Length: 113
Image (cartoon, rainbow, N blue to C red; front, side, top):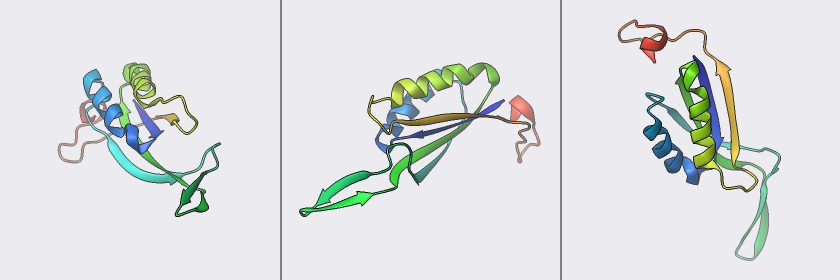
């Protein structure tokens, strides 16, 4: 099993969730509002004629645990639905998951996902 962490623009969250739902490759997701900084290094905004620098940009983190055979499909769906072609589209990280245990039933492995 693998954990997929995708950091995306907040306005793309509903597109990504809808696309993931259609794949049927996952059973649940953890979604967190985060602030971050990548190569973009922030943006300059203007408000009431004053310019100010935002060093940390609002993003959304989506965490999924999927079967090994579903990783490529999930990555493709996230990339296709989150991509705008502009800087700041985000990143996808893939981690190994050693064990999963469902607390309610004690199920482990793929059965717990």
